[in-house]
Length: 332
Ligand code: F6P
Image 1 (cartoon, helix red, strand yellow):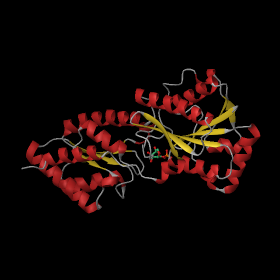
Image 2 (cartoon, rainbow, N blue to C red; image 1 turned 90 degrees about the vertical axis):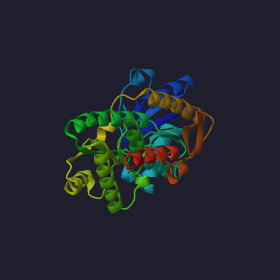
Image 3 (cartoon, protein in one colour; image 1 turned 90 degrees about the horizontal axis):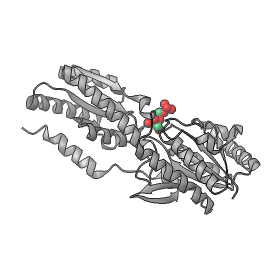
Image 4 (cartoon, helix red, strand yellow; image 1 turned 45 degrees about the horizontal axis):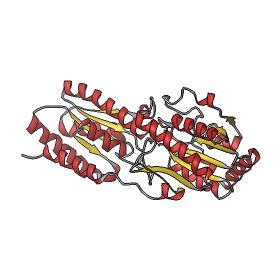
């Protein structure tokens, strides 16, 4: 093997640069040429790339975002696009393509594999952690830290005014960030897609819990962590409904894209470095159409189709204890 390529695709995640660095330096260690496509799959279609050398990855491990830039490329799902990408890769003599991204990017990778003879290897990089077959995705730990730091700050002002705050976190349709941020911040309530009931029931639950809290603790602050895309009309609407029904002032806080930025925490840097190096070694071993991941400190590969077709579950023990801690407040 002489040449590999890589790209970052979909929502960027802190640690992507650490992963790019590990791929480039491991590639150079094995005397491979490494090229980086810019702007995700768009770069593959437009043949927009750069040769990556050690100087390109110097001093980037601590930086959020991605030096290669990222994009979501809807066009990539057509056969014409995949064929064009295959032609471009062949023209450059690329033998393996490493894709750092999430489920949408891996769907694209699988589509490309139908039209390209080279090796396709995915590396899980998304703050959502919604990728099957790995304990954590690159960027997930940093996103939890960012959410936690923000919730701690919200709590200060919530306490001062004895208000209810609804803090919306990212995760798309997965509750990993929400559950962990709620546990770590000792939030009073959490709403996650995996646990969600009918909206009316959910509303009744929260109201009953706030009322019980008032009786038990007196007038205090109350924090609800809620995953995005869960409440039909959004968290601002939910805050209004709660204010009207409880008479307690509720405020919405949408954390949004701040969760995608910032310097990666050490766990994301180490995970990114391990997965980057391992992906290059898998490429050298001739592996194809796989995703690399880590489970219980063991590096592994699985079919790339599994990574997005199978559903990753929340930690059931964490769910159980969150529920127990929540129930205590409602005891007479
Ligand atoms: O997948 C990462 C993510 O940040 C999700 O948590 C969020 O729903 C989505 O991307 C936002 O995407 P965009 O930046 O395209 O609005």
